[in-house]
Image (cartoon, rainbow, N blue to C red; front, side, top):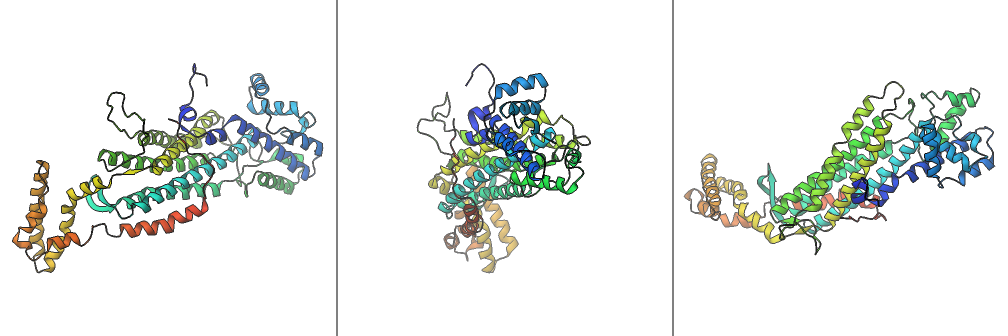
Length: 473
């Protein structure tokens, strides 16, 4: 790797080799050549004078792209597609006359982009499923461990560690459904021509509209698409890009939320991300165990969440049948959105696979607040014993505030002792109220239901893939 020029850290440090490869020049230009082949094959099938020898020549040179030759042609022509037409023609001299026949540049570039988007969305779906699987395993392990829950970042009615993990997994399951929807909705542009009217193909087929329609469908089928966008200008509508980036931003939102929760829990010493034995938390403070992975998840997720506005603006300014101000922008935004989300999900899977829980700290923190959580149960028991609900509520309020003052002064929480010594609650067995449950409601049962109804179907749809989940630094 050269060190005298800027390198994109999404590739050099964060994203996987698999996702980087999807957006590589090799993958893109190999797709271009395949689309030229699909077009020629379909044109031959529909009667144009294209020989088997010409098609065989194209098939023999789908991946051996001469990048130096293409670069030289582009410097000469100032046109990337025509540069690659000529570079392809150099190694396919017999087929040169029929390469790109009837097509316009976006017939090639846009269809290739759609193929790359399809593959990239599929990879995101696999990574989401892998993280959901890991969170599901964690949730099952800690389904019954009571912990303090929070609303407004203030102590609230307890939940369980496993139930909280299900909240994280559910967000990702919602994201996965959106990714799957976008994949199912994705279509081919196929062969629409310079302004979307297919005029060039109509001329090639001597005004035979049915052959033009069959050509469009046949090329789409060869690309593996079941359908085509019914109308277009020169390009497929850039709303597709905008919608896909919205979905990726949704994944980023879910990951950022989980990573923030984990950073907060780490500060309370209840949970933390995995740490290697020789990992250094701080160059100055040797004792530090900083939540580096979670912080990086938030950083990369924040970047991904910033990109949909860009794609929305691009979709909004595509004048008439097209402009070219989308091209340079999309070269940046589309790959980097996927690379960022790939990096986020790599981190998420790594973290979810090695989450560390400290049950004694979890219990300690819960017990410091549990007396306050039990007051509603005590109130109900006292009312059932014949007490005045409003009077009892006021007594509990006064005792609670006094206990809060004690805690803030550094003393123990004495709320239970205060209530037990209050004659208004003499008829209530306060100890029995505490022994009657851990105040987590149906949280453990909800974990089991979520795993069977949501996680298991995802596991069946996405068996373990060969995708690597390594983080580099």
